[in-house]
Amino acid sequence: MKIEAYGLSDIGLERETNQDAFVSDIQSNIFIVADGIAGSQHGEVASALACKTIHADLKKNQKAPHPEDALEAAILHANQNILNQAKANHSLWGMATTVCVLWIQNETAYLTHAGDSRIYYYQSPHLWQLTEDHTVAEQHNKLGLSLETVDPSDKNKITKYLGSEELLSIEIEKKVLSPNESYLICTDGLSSQLASGEISKILNLKKTDVVCDTLVKQANARGGIDNVTTVFINIL
Image (cartoon, rainbow, N blue to C red; front, side, top):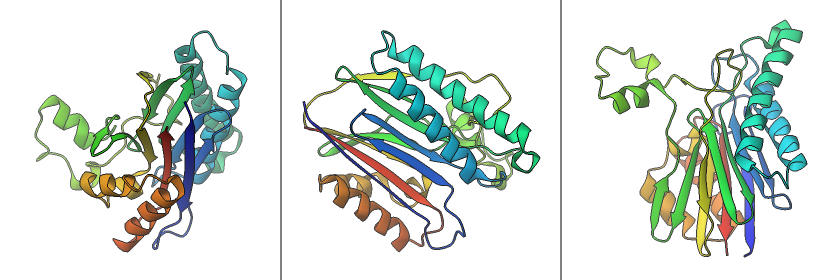
């Protein structure tokens, strides 16, 4: 089984900094996307630290007998590193980030996330969202609650993230890999601008660098209101 992958990040057209970070490590089959949360101080520091910590931990555990445990430990380590750095430098206090991780071990993909960055599964011509947005709006929808009483500015508020002092619950999904399938990891700078059908058509281009470049260009064509980051993985 062969794996191809490519990642691309763009500042967009309206932001002064890029608070996204990503890892596309084809040698170790580690793929990560993180998005510094808007409104928090130095989100770019949090997202970069999350990627660095998780990447390093997973590389050390390539032959871990229990990949789920290794992945959970890496996420919790990243969360603690973000908190520790914020405590050591008060100007960083409150920094936070979303995260999505796809780690391939023994032809099985292990996936986890926190926040509203997403992992999609694609098998032409169908696209499935594998992750659930950790937002106030999604939480209300899941519980069948009305959003009428929620302040519009709070609807997209992130309810689960790295940089949290609360005990994080880590959910990990396993998928046995098959040929001719693909995975897309992206920040909300993409998913908020393009509908699923539009994303699906672009993923059908298949070539990893072309897909990422086209997704970013299309997000910017819609106004580029946010940073946009994509990592596209083909299983051949």
